[in-house]
Amino acid sequence: MLQQRLLSMAHTELLGLREGLDRSGEDSVLCLIRDPSEPAPGPGPGELSAILVQQEIGAFLARIISDAVLKHLQTDLTPGPASVILRCAGDPAALLHRLEREFAARVESWTGALQTGTQGDTILGLTTRPVSAALHEADLAGPCLLIPMPGHTLQQRLRSEAILYITENLEDHSWRELRISIFDSTGNHLLNYERLLCAIRDLETGMILAEQWTHDNAFTLMAVPTFEIRFFTFEPIRDIKRVLMGLEYDDDGTRLVDLDLFAQNRKIPWVQAARGRDDATDQDTRNWLVRCLSPASRHCTGRKELAAQCRNELLARLSANAARELRSLDRRLRERHNDAP
View 1 (cartoon, one colour):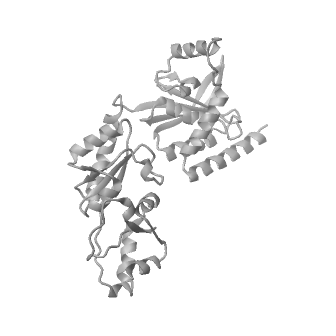
View 2 (cartoon, one colour; view 1 turned 90 degrees about the horizontal axis):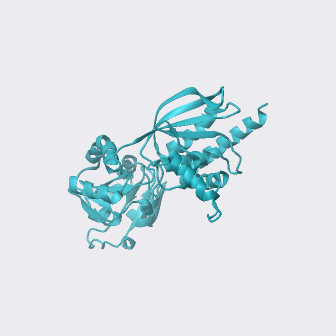
View 3 (tube, helix red, strand yellow; view 1 turned 60 degrees about the vertical axis):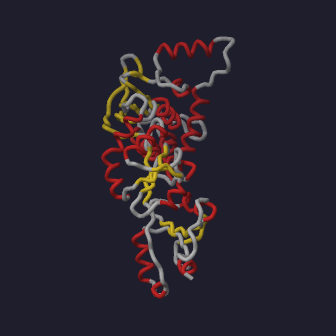
């Protein structure tokens, strides 16, 4: 009776627990119904079903309390453990071990923590993916922690300490300050800046510290206007370069803009995006070119081919909304290029 009444409400559907976890978001509620006279189900995730409610918990509880039919049913509402997802950089296993010690936590699977946790506990999961988008169980970096602490208390701790956890877990224990220079021969620098913001905001790759107009001496005795941003990130330089190369070209392989990346006043060459390490020194670049030109070398990926790979990779990483926004901005940019004299 109770389950039928809840499912008759708007924005509710009956799912398996694992599917419910995958489809739930920050403003969703997972409602589990159990007869108190029956024994609690075992730890297997396939044994539980849940009602997914696409509504904030306060509004959902208000609906239950004010419902005329539910008032006559003997129900006991017991909140389960809160849940928090923390994005991590570096080694997730090392950070998980540190948090386990600092919070006297217990390592659990997500479904196991959901069944054994109480309203005074919080499930903490780690992920290397952006936390602004919907996450699935497969996006979690390893098991979860069941922390004996209410959710709001843990969130307060993490707000002040999350940056410290990220920094200390990085391989070199430091963030990177980079410069990104935008040059568009048709003068559409600010539209390209919107495209860049669309990507870095959705991917949560870092923070913009400053932006300014400047000039770049692209040719001898000739300075061209560029729009430059200072960027603070914990991502590897190679990954940032790949994002920029994915933005330089559209889906048809047409180059839309020049996006140059600088680290410690050193321009990062495009070949850095093809390597798996950050030391893109001039000597490394020369050695790479020598290997490519050698008759015995394997086929060397060109810039345009590499950019196409980076473009596909970028679109796969973006959320559906961000990918649509980026393509819309691309169309606007191409139209302006076509209208330019």
